[in-house]
Image (cartoon, rainbow, N blue to C red; front, side, top):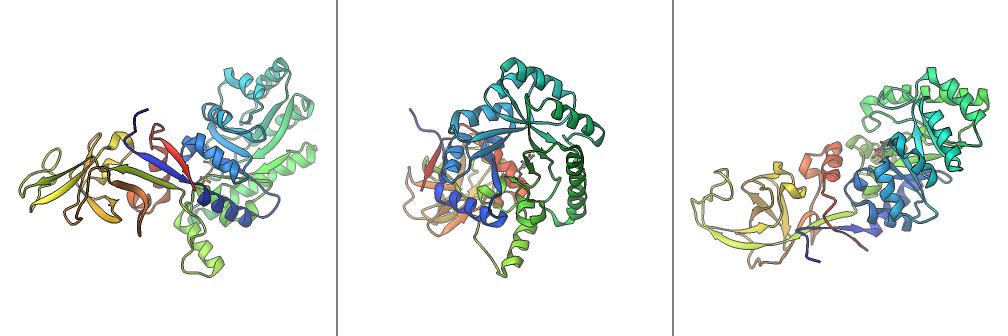
Length: 385
Ligand SMILES: *Cc1c(COP(=O)(O)O)cnc(C)c1O
């Protein structure tokens, strides 16, 4: 097999560290569902599922049936998969047959699930998602009583696996009033379960930010995405953590991801020449540039043109000119002896220097997610220590 233009290394020890940190935060007896939507936030779902199992994870959450199918192919017998988002009617049979748990967020779906469970001769594993204020998916108050009656009546065919909701913006302290309101509404749904004596097996509402910042939102399970990959959900969450432990900085969460490539060519450019497309970069003196074998089609953001950095021989070097579809250039005038084939770090650490994903998006972690989740699935992922 020929080599790809770049590669991603995933650190097992960092992931294990992150999972252990999260476990300690949420306490004993709380299950972690590892959220692996968007190709495990760009890390690579197949490799990541294996690594997470090594770190003790036995539950995986995806956004779609398509992703759940990828989890199914990677996970061991003893792990469960859960679809939080899109499952088409025609795939309900498939989910039930494979024992995959899935969200139901409107009453109309329940009769279809019942029919399918009967047809497959197997119990469906259903999480009822309720609307508490995010107004994306979630069952309304009006549909809930009928839902509970339905679940009570058909408990043999449909397991009431979970009752859940999702916070819209738990990572920002300025949303605290909204999070509190959503939690109160969730408690009301729970109360109705109690009144009707129809109980979910597990209750789960917390994402990374809620699990780390709002202990009262931690029920039987938490759905952890961004934090397991070593990112604080937001500066707010990080500073709250620092306050709790009384420190100036903390490295409790470790990035597990390093993105590498190699120098493709090295060349001299005379003063006055332009580099790459157009005239956006003109050499003001004689310089030496190294050519990188990837560009925006490989997930390297075009916004890095003339401003981003990569690491070569442990030194930070600047991008010169525009990021092309499959190439970009960096200024290596000040680094002696750069050669074709030298390792380049695009994101991560090399010797004593680091390029953070956040430098791509100026600190806001939401954009971290965007950048990560857009990394092409075709880039090979390798698990390292
Ligand atoms: C993405 C997602 C999560 C995980 O969120 P993080 O902030 O990355 O921890 C949890 N629950 C649902 C429903 C999600 O869509």
